[in-house]
Amino acid sequence: MRTLCIARETLAFRDGLQISRLPCRARTGSISLYGTPELKQRYLPGVRDGKAIAAFALSEPEAGSDVAAMATTATPDGNAHVRIDGAKTWISNGGIADHYVVFARTGEARRERPVRLHGRCDTAGLTVAERIDVIAPHPLATLKFDACRVP
Image 1 (tube, rainbow, N blue to C red):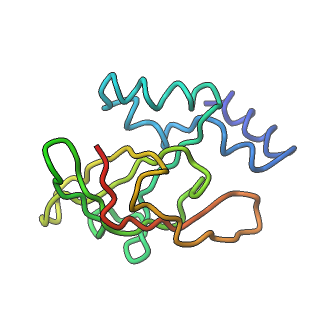
Image 2 (cartoon, one colour):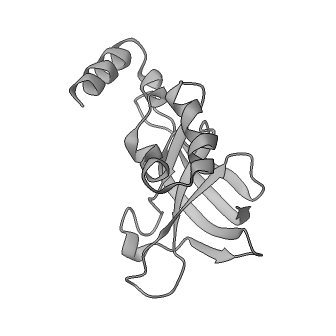
């Protein structure tokens, strides 16, 4: 962890945007810990090698990062897909990421655990609704999911 912090600080001194290229456990942790071998092979090597950028989509316009208040939904769509509907905001690497780890509600129960979905950025129904300007050169965006179908 200390090495990662020093590397991030050094890169940020030269170019703040470059720290978003570093692998970040929050952005790929669910794939590392719970992903199938196929998901791990599809997404992790590119992030590890610095050839792909990952993003983590949890926060929402009305809920912030309160998972219990999350409104984005994932509903079954066929045997091997789900449909995502909702919005995520303040997403680091939003709009420049190659893939997103998206948290969505799968049921109505308040204590229902959200599902983490892994989708590519060129998936139909996923749009960058807004780029959020901040002083730091850090890409933030609001994402809109409108019948976004992912495996």
